[in-house]
Length: 386
Image (cartoon, rainbow, N blue to C red):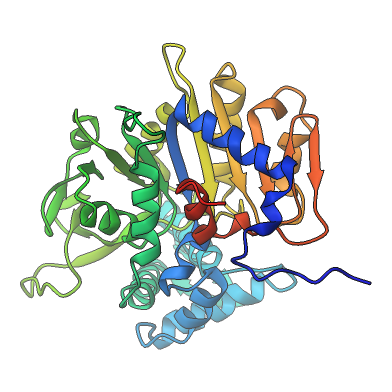
């Protein structure tokens, strides 16, 4: 007879001694180390925002897409025929890469400064406009009323005293955010915690990477893929923070500044993306003998660039980086399995999966789902609740 699965928010399956020890060890680790969090789309679901598959469906039917953009998307989707889980970021990345090809041809004076997708020909301008329309569709889907409660609880839990009588570590907490939404920034502000995200100003702001090096910060927010309230104005390649409700002068063109996960062309070499990537590399390579814990939540390891950066940091940190991953998979899969099977880094990787805990030579499995993979329950564990 199969065991009855507990409710998803019931933490009782974690009371098994082996899992209690895994939680206690994590608490101990976090009191002794610098702390960083890598947050993916799964962390925003509880706020009412869509997962990537839902985002894709909504964007493909958005009124922001004109007929040419729909034609381009349809053609690109045909190129992905047979692929698994091709999402809106994959499609946008493909178009950006095709734009790079067309731009390169135009720069060299080629007669055929266009690309052909499934027998249809598209110009540089059509591809460039399509990118902007798709980005606007993403913003339209994500720029909605959200529920901040769980993220506010999460921020309180992370920044609370780690032990009775022990204050929060003076080193700022680093949030490496892969999402375009502003939930982490909003929650930090609601909790009145001083943070920097690379912007200087207020609701409307300009890019100044020096803000990330300020002293007396409680947190730094590294928006690795940009943000729904970042834009690029015609006279400045660096981002501004401008509310979508702010009407700019008619002659001021505003371009949404977000970078899809798979993009490798040009954006990765330009500021601020390059500055943010450099900052991430420094965070993942603690200096002066210090330790850093990178806790990964709501991320399915679909961004090969991010995976590579973490992998290199694990190998180059001389054991000073510990990766803690909460995953919906029953056991280590993909990138996590590679790390778990690699003798040179497996001691540095702790995997809290849906059906077990895996670390170095430890493999503790469960016949029922372990609810620690959910963002809300990670928050409860950080609050000290079991």
